[in-house]
Image (cartoon, rainbow, N blue to C red):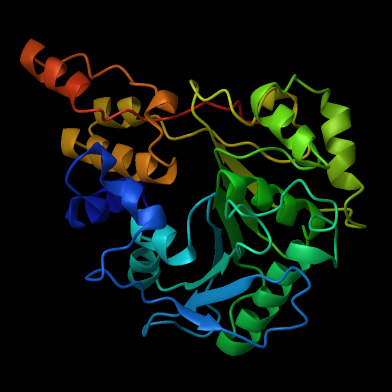
Length: 316
């Protein structure tokens, strides 16, 4: 599927009113907005005591892809679904959707415990629970085992790193949105330091953490990392990672200048990205407008908060 086709699809989605409109989706849902996610029980021993929510569109074909989506702190599976549109995308493109959910009894803030060794080791805790959910989805919907993907936001992004490190043979690829590298913390104190004071780490050190997490020898899942250049939380020293294939965040301005998308398309993609980045305004970098815009249009551009959190990662 091309960038232009995705942009056209996003443009047709109902627009939300205002920059802060997404904020309520993460925690408080209006009764008129119902997620199609359905809870599944009995998916295994569930050592991490997580809840399993899933959605399979009517047009799901045998051998479809499976996308695992992990929410951020303070969010629910349904809230993140409605805020970011995952079930809508599942209907559009015909993939099965799995959205694990944290419970307050595990973490008062609703965060996945990406820093707790009991939850980040293979066959243990929350990582094992998510793996069991994937197995249940594979059995129920006969998904293609070579097209299983995982993505997550914030703490969910950090937990995405955990899943890719502990079960690399399960996933074809993953997307870490505003998350953290695997193994940078083993307790709450280290987690906070990792988020706010994380120094750059040698490539070999980060690589060894991943390689020791399982007996897997490759090939490794392809990974894209989405992180704001003004966001100082999380991926410090991102250029040091050598264990995954990094891809470049699509350059919207280049696409615009080459005629692939128009201004509405640029803004539609930015809107989707903002939704994925929890709309924390202090972490949103306003990108420069296209050079051929009028002075008034530029002023409106800057006032509209169409900021795209982004960090261009060198492809290795």
